[in-house]
Length: 262
Ligand SMILES: C[S@@+](CC[C@H](N)C(=O)[O-])C[C@H]1O[C@@H](n2cnc3c(N)ncnc32)[C@H](O)[C@@H]1O
Image 1 (cartoon, protein in one colour):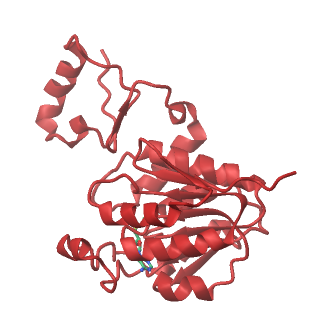
Image 2 (cartoon, rainbow, N blue to C red; image 1 turned 180 degrees about the vertical axis):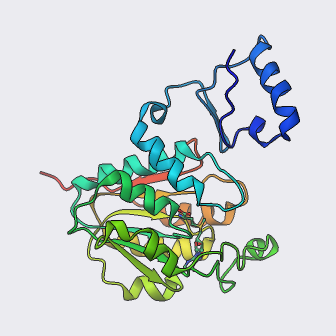
């Protein structure tokens, strides 16, 4: 009998007294599926490689413990894909960038697993004061996006990521002001996780101008319910371009620029 309860699963979210009967049911019901992963909007019976990677598990547990202060989240498939794309891009000359860094959870996972050499810069763009109200779409205003995710600060994130100095470069302010003013050079890897349509569109247009051959862009919440305005803007920017945008079952999407011809 397997009595384990993975963090973030439906059973883990039940009140404690209900968890034991729920696990019992899970184990004895004949139609039970042997999920290797069941969290974050995704259930799969397939090989989930992070289950066998102890270094990843240690980094993930350390990061998750202080990421969202009042809930433990199991986003291991998203983190696995994000960190794999970040590792892939080490073969591409250029800077790394994240747009939407919040408390530095993803940035920390990337730094811990991609092992970027000290000559590489990882630019981390955020207001570090929550989502600005300006330029939100009517639906985003209605859903009260303004001011969300304000429980962070540039100083805290600098401190958190200081073990990887001089690679991280924390850039505080609205991306409409900060990104055009930041000299990144060619970009090898970008993670776009702004949770709002207009800044996502702005950043995507300008990252595409700077994306190096072979470079990758990972979108965090492309397929998520509640972010339809953002998805529509991304699709509009990518439509007619040579790059293919690939939606992933985690809700993420990835866009790759073809490597330069030999
Ligand atoms: C979901 S959070 C990012 C999560 C982050 N990747 C992590 O690892 O936890 C979205 C972030 O986008 C930022 N953001 C949204 N609109 C922005 C804008 N116009 N300029 C700068 N930051 C913005 C918010 O402040 C928020 O911290």
